[in-house]
Length: 163
Ligand code: CUA
Image (cartoon, rainbow, N blue to C red; front, side):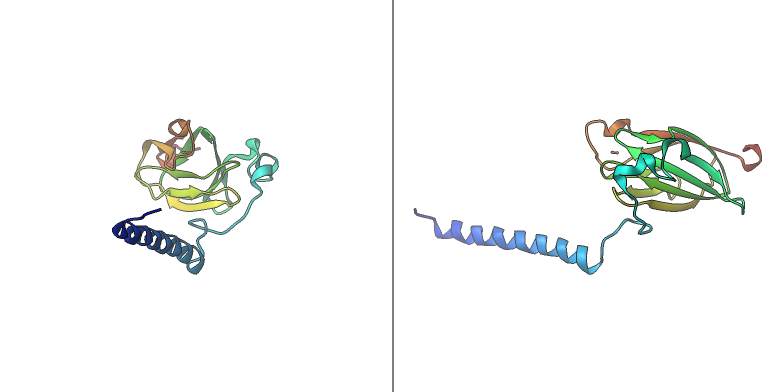
């Protein structure tokens, strides 16, 4: 089979480009030990619905002894649960997210809540919400055909109005 010399050069060039790209991905993954954005805490995704923390009736807002809040949520195809939350402004909040299925990304506008949620890990975000009003918490990682249905409504109220 005849291959034009110029074509041959480009076959090698493309091969080299692919090697460099794959190499840099693997280098970044291993050299920087890529892990979930905020903390490395594992969870059994397959048994999430039976877990102490992420079972359906355990989700939502918990008040800690020091007055801060812990919010436990599950991102699953295709929803973020609980689907509605009321949170006080100007209060330290720790969000803890997990997923039973695939990679999701959770983002709440006008806040620092923006994290990947990776199967097998718990993603933790610490925040203090400054702006009152209604905000969506939505998925920003394409996760399948219902990706755009994945969102929860978060209502941030004045601290004095919150119960
Ligand atoms: Cu979940 Cu996109």
